[in-house]
Structure formats: C-alpha cells, structure tokens
Length: 118
Image 1 (tube, one colour):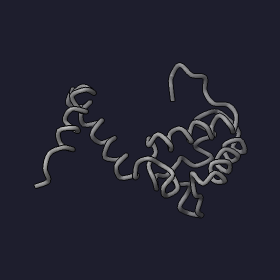
Image 2: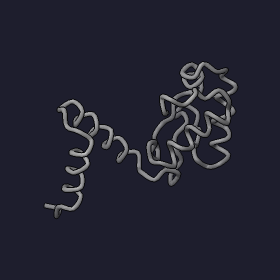
Image 3: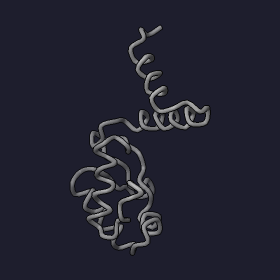
Image 4: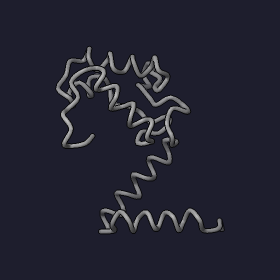
C-alpha cells in the first residue's frame, strides 16, 4: 500500500487493494491472505466490511476460502506462483540486510536468470 494513499475504508477499497496485489504478483498463487479478523483490525474497519471484500474477491475467482485452510490466492489468479513470491521476498530481505541496493539486486537476478543451468 502506498503510504501517501488514504487507508482503505470500504469493502470495495479493501477488495481493490488485494486485487492489485494479486494481479501484480505481490501475492502469488496459493498464498494465504490475512484472516478477515486480522484485515479488519489492520485497517480499523468492521469484520463484516472485510468479509464483504473477501466475498467479492471470491466471486471474481481471485481467491478461494476453505474451512481450516483460510483464504488463499486462487490458482492462476496471480502473475507469480507463491513460491516465487516467497523467494523474491527472501532475496529482497537478504539484499537489504547486506546493504545491497535494489538495482544491484536486480542485476544479480538478471545475471542468474540468463546463466546456463549447471
């Protein structure tokens, strides 16, 4: 979420936030969304509002909710598989911890991407 943007307040705002994260690949296929209760707490909204947002995402086929498994990004909904997003986050965290800048981390990824497999 852009820190300069106003916090989402409506179910449509919440759905749009998650929709963007899914379609951009920030949330990958199979990744778990926060619980409705956590989402409501995070944004200071009613649980019913958060639940309405999740229902809208489910109706669009972007997420699937299963008892005891929570709400997850539906297969094929994201540009990236969950494991790719997880590893990209790990790379970003490692680069930041080592003081490596964004451009240098991307250059490393490009070099690894185009290197022949061993």
